[in-house]
Image (cartoon, rainbow, N blue to C red):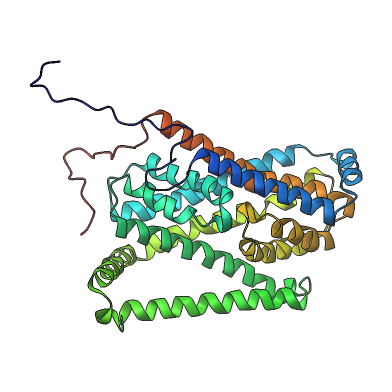
Length: 356
């Protein structure tokens, strides 16, 4: 190399010890530690609250008669993950029309790993924002998309859970479970109302520090653009999230059918509604501890005792371990292929943000 030639510095490679996404502060070691803690707490919880787990597993093995139901449950899980990824793709491409569909869907799949291996799943949101920034989506728009998706996700769950309060399902709820559902629904409705009103009349916005105010104004503009998608976008996103929850709610009945269970469906669905509401209360990765106690308490009232532990272990594998494994696979593939997805171009059309 001659003295006149500038020195070329190689880009740092992503290794097992480095961050899994630039700026995320996460590493494979940290994710593995979180998963290990969650699994350990889950195992201890089962050992304490289900002391006869060994005998129950042996009994469940003897009664398992329909293994094809486990395959059906796996297909339902894949449907749920695809529906969730498609939701993110729809919202992102509303704001940035040329963003890669495959790369955007990968952000959602990787989010399953981050959410399942961190406390409260709390790093899933900032991680996905960082990843979308790597796809040339602005910080404000990435934040808007993730927050809107989260609100729709929770809202559809709340509507599904509200069905448990109808006469058909209310009989399967204890008074405490009814109050939990009512409290969550009231908080969600209040949040939607306050957010909608403030979007229309942002009282106090001018009194905020200018940098904060500018960010909020950009956020409002991004939300307005999403709302500009009209009824078609709203229906599509809602339908995808409804598909997600229907698929997730079908897992426990399918698992129980594989174990030879033939019982009433309504108490199982109602129990899942409450379980999904209380799992985020656990500070541990994957809702560890709360998920196991909640399952044993809620499902244990409706299914034979000797099937409870086996169905719990399979359910946790399907809803926690497998999604994280798929997220890790997606992350490993992205890392091995360069770490940063390119934005696809669409012929001669400019790939700037859409409909600005």
